[in-house]
Image (cartoon, rainbow, N blue to C red; front, side, top):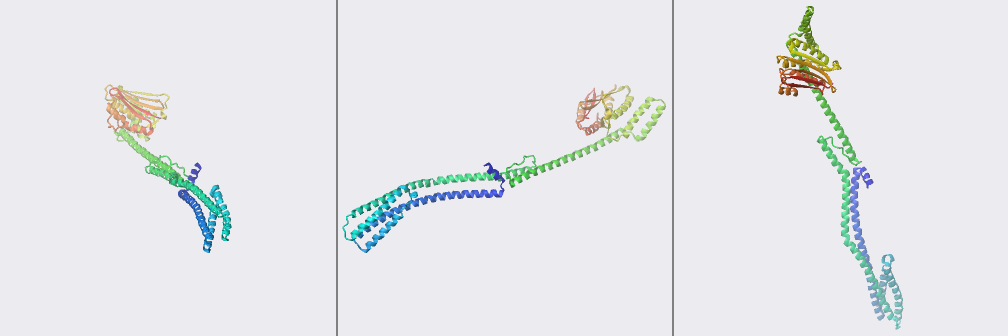
Length: 491
């Protein structure tokens, strides 16, 4: 069965269709031939029985006619009676010769009784001619009664032959009658068998032809619904249907890969576009930050050159504090004017913060204390950060945190490494930030410039995350106690 199925799966569809149609036709023809053969055989058997019985009846009638013709002839010796007698004898002999005498066909008992009839008639015929010649020559032949006895015996033999023929015919008829009576049930059984075979061949034909087509239709429906992750269609066919299914699976994979490539390209383009927008926005924010730092200067280059001259004069006059303040301010202007890059080292940012805090300390005097703690084994020159990152944070701490306190306070810078990350903390002991504003700052909402950690904080946060995706900026504050800005760089 497995070999047949394997061979069937390899057949082309055209040959499968022809084989299926031819099989149905052959089954129908076999059923018809069986019915015809059964009915024909029954009819032939019945015909043979009737023919044998008819021959026995004909022989019995012929012998009766012969005996009557013999009586007429011996009583009245005329030509008409002689002719009738001779014709009757010929007819009787012909009837005897037509009796079935095949041992295989009629069986041993009928064969023996037929042989007895033939032999008895041969002996009777010899005795009859001898007695007839004696009577015709005027002799009173006494053996005539023996001849009548022979005639009665012959009739008895023929009667026995008829009886056994009828008996055997009746038996055959009963057998055939039983078969004929069972014929409708046989026909029903054959019809059911034919239907079952037809269904089995139909299911085999369907499983190897229509079933793969249904699976293919479902696969096409999945593709129309943009579902390319469905399982491949698997069929056992090795014919045209199998080739079609394999081609469909290859096409689905190719389309899926093509669409995935398009989606990846689209995501990449969107990311590039987003990065470009962020870059433009950062440049814009950087320019705004630079303008904010220089907004009070009409001609910063002229101011920078003038400060250099004043610093030189202060040095000549031995005004060390004035000279140092002017130098720190010059450094701030030089950093603002000459730093065109978006990213600088952390050491440069700390240096700028030191100059800025020196000037603010000169301004506020003992009200302002600046603390700096940098981990000793940390190389700040190798750490790259966004430009103008620390100074705006310290400026927010002084303006919005300490300036409002009469007694002033402290601003601290802490730089250290922890858990594979660089932490930069700028803290103050100022007035702190209200809880609602603190939530707005940490959530990244737009904040007015005059608010604590305002536009500078937002700008720094964006630029830092553009450099280090996993970095974060967190503000912690307690009203009345102070504020801490924590910058975490996943370096």
